[in-house]
Image (tube, rainbow, N blue to C red; front, side, top):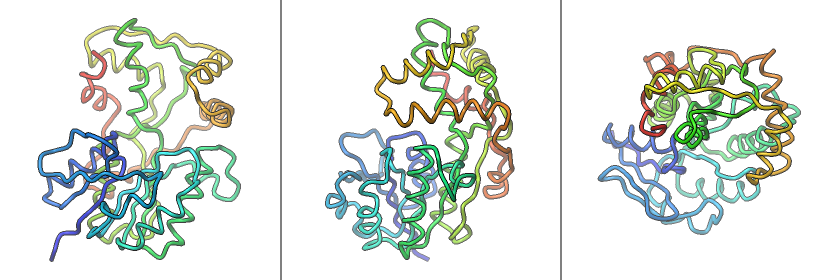
Length: 283
């Protein structure tokens, strides 16, 4: 049986990069969609294109059987044209969605949930074989603290008690590879979680253990966090949505499941393991 050729979008990101690496290691022909120079494993084909310009995707999609789709924008504008372009070449799309879609499918109220919901609907209506991966929070979001950790050893952020079952990008990539290379997840929307709830304060402590240096979580107010997000250029609708949604999770945390193990045969990695895998990012 001929191996499928797979195009990975978001190939220079944490999840997309892990998907590229796993496919390449397994001997699956993999092509990376890039907008410029990229550090990819030797033998991986890089093709220039931009999801913001569907007309630029033809060369990347030519001869492709399946696409791993990471949507890089905060709205679904233009997504229909991209999915139409994919459908002219490929037979399958695996979309990196969000766990929030499952709980708010009828009436999404968060901006980030809304665009994922719209993307899922477009993918499902495309006529392609499809899978929508619905992960909880990414462990790699903790990389947003890297500069503070390297320079001050203090993370200033709100919601110290916010606990989430953060998922390691390698586990998410392993499920994505299964969806891309087998038929077992066609039409599925698996909810993918890490193995345990870990508070933000505990995340910082675990990073400190991994790098061998004590760190401190300095809890700020939500108002201060809002001002920092605005100053950093976050869109207003996301600023208004993200922190209140996270605050609600303190009393109503996301579920924890064993889908990663069920689908890959290997238990999901802990946040401690993620921190150990990313020591170089924090030193």
